[in-house]
Each structure stands twice: as C-alpha cells, then as structure tokens.
Image 1: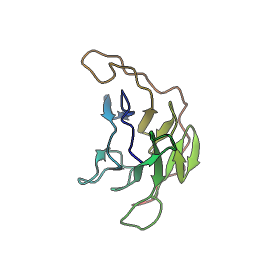
Image 2: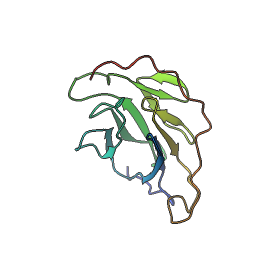
Image 3: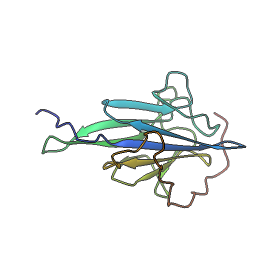
Image 4: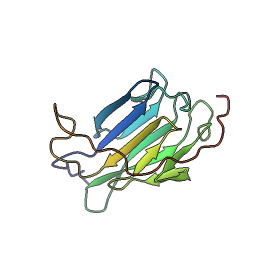
Length: 146
C-alpha cells in the first residue's frame, strides 16, 4: 500500500528551557524513524541532562487508509532497554504511545515537545507564533546517573 502524503506533514515543536532562555525548534516529520536524544548522532537533538544519548524513537506507522501516524517509544539502544529517566505523554509516564494531535511529550523537566498532526499552515515560518504547551509539568523522580 502506498503511503498518502499529507498536505501539511505532522510537526514536532520542541521547547527546551536553559538557565536564561527557552529555545523552540519546529521539526517537520516525514522520515520513517527518528532518534531523539542528546547524542551527536540523534536525528532530533536535545541538550537536557535528563535525556539519554538515544532517549526515544519516533516510528512512522501506516493506517489502513494509507495515511500515517507516529508512535513514540521510550528506548535507549545503548542500554537495550528503556531510557534511564523515561518519557511522559500528557502528564503520564509511558513506555510507548501512538501520538495524536496535541500530545505533549516530556523528556525530563527542561524539554517538552508537542506533536501536531494537523499543524497550522505557517508553523515554523519566520514570524509565526508557535503554540506553548498547555500541559502542566510532570513531577519526575530524582535523576539517575546515565
């Protein structure tokens, strides 16, 4: 079955807090797999000390109508198991999750990402306003040493 290309591909909007600013990055999704982590070889890099080098994966999956969606999986290839500090989706700790429009993913206390299946047409363009996360932060347990 051929994958139907969406008019506007889904996006992941990453908000990363540092000591003096919040960085926002808009990633248009289209590849079959993305590695998210702080490692140099991660497709989507985050700098949080709470993120593993290969913290989680976004995996493209096919719907019966030929369209696709993304699933996020908490997995660190180096460890061969879930990441050290895990992920939260919409305030709940999860190992994996089929993403739906508006889901908020937390990678520790300083990095949040929002998945938009139906993003505004101009998201990520110069001067466009990027929505902020409506989900209050998850209270992560103390960090384990990576």
